[in-house]
Image (cartoon, rainbow, N blue to C red; front, side, top):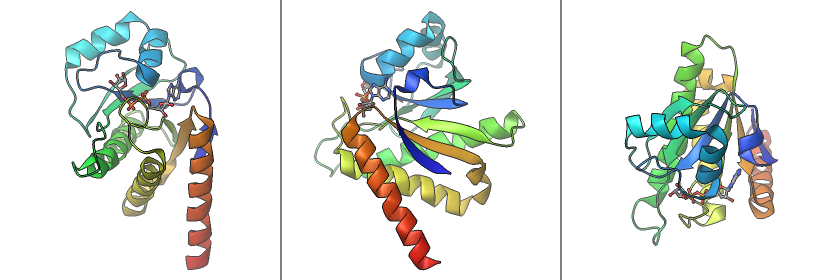
Length: 183
Ligand code: AR6
């Protein structure tokens, strides 16, 4: 199932939450800063051992003091003008995070898994919100249609801002209407 929620992602006890990280896996600001400060120093230590993550890629760590079980750190693109493969990189963030979550689910012999995404790149990295929302939803839908086993993952788009929450609700409704009209 794919859904949306307006909340602070750091307070959620879903199985995995996703961090909108930077390539050096340092605390930074935004949702990343909040995740690092609530998870505790050990998260910084684990991230420094990993060292680096390229734009569009994702890595997984323990969640330490956070209520979730694990954190996936993915590095979104810095939005320039839309002509620097920003859409491909943003889509890769969602795709690679979902793939990691799927492997985690299999490795831990879980039947289902809950995965919470923030609106990657739409804060400090400046990605236009509506476009980012469309890419996020269409990427998750595409992966699930190519790999039906991944439907065991419940994806929750966690919006901090009301405007993102409205966008996600509208876009998810649009997909639902399309699905019904195809069926
Ligand atoms: N829970 C859920 N979403 C949040 C929270 C929260 N607690 N706080 C902010 N958001 P941003 P980016 C939303 O700037 O654009 C960092 O310094 C926010 O409203 O956190 O990918 C990193 O280290 C927005 O919708 O991430 C990188 O250097 C979304 O999270 C850089 O910023 C993403 O905003 C990454 O920039």
